[in-house]
Length: 369
Ligand code: OSB
Ligand code: MG
Image 1: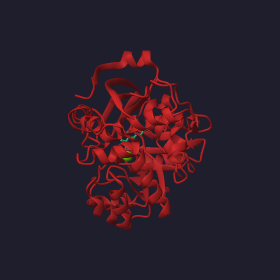
Image 2: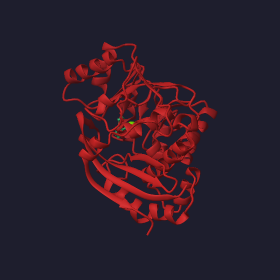
Image 3: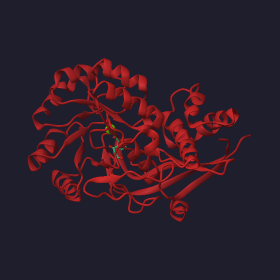
Image 4: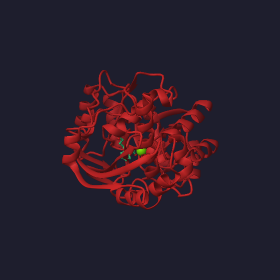
């Protein structure tokens, strides 16, 4: 395939409710949406999951746009006729920037699969037609507010609850939610808010029968996670630390993680995600698909990935209504706690072009120089 033109939009979508984590409070989602057009007449779409500030990961929207325009896209244009499987190799000389690279690879993959008439799920190796949904619940204003929010999600049918925690908002919310719903699959996510000095505190989560504790320590503290993992009963699951296949392999070898959260953006794309999935299946390690408050574009691809056989835990693949009043694609609607895997070619969703235009704050076209 030969890329003719790349369009990068910045969009802003208000969240249905503020989302507070240990690294900040988000009221809306700013992100980049990419559309590539090929000389064969195909279009491919992808969203870049980086956030507007480098608080979850080192990447951020304006930085992603810059690295894509300045380095990544020129390398793709220069390479010429390209297959999706060649993208990672072409971009490899440029260090890190996984989310930016994932965006380009995903858009090219979408265009290729649309030309070939193959869905994302079939291409990646999905063996399910629908996936179990979990929901990520932000740090609330009060315990009462948390209980109300969790009740709503449970009545909507979510199959797993994930509570965001931080020092001062951990044992109490967990014990209250566990007390009210003794059987609901429950897990917590600290987004790096603890340190090795908190091992005794985190051990106090053991009685609550949590599925896992997600990324309690600094993203670079892999040894700390191994020490913690040996000291507590609850499985430890890395998120931020897993930036590649190699990082996953090493963290597993060090027993720093016993469950893995795969986020395609964080690891550089869906092809790398499948490699990590295969590694985990080989090692009998449970995986689940993380989320980055995606729009329908990113969600479609995530749901396809989550339909692979090794994804045995519900993911942060929630319905569109969990995030946005109106999505930029046909909405993902949950039925019986599950989302259906799109079956159309490529990511298999339709873009709402009018709405997309409405929420676009910047738009740039990049062509071969
Ligand atoms: O740590 O998993 C995380 C959202 C943004 C950035 C990081 C994380 C999250 C979530 C929400 O937990 C996942 C989702 O529902 O998209
Ligand atoms: Mg996380």
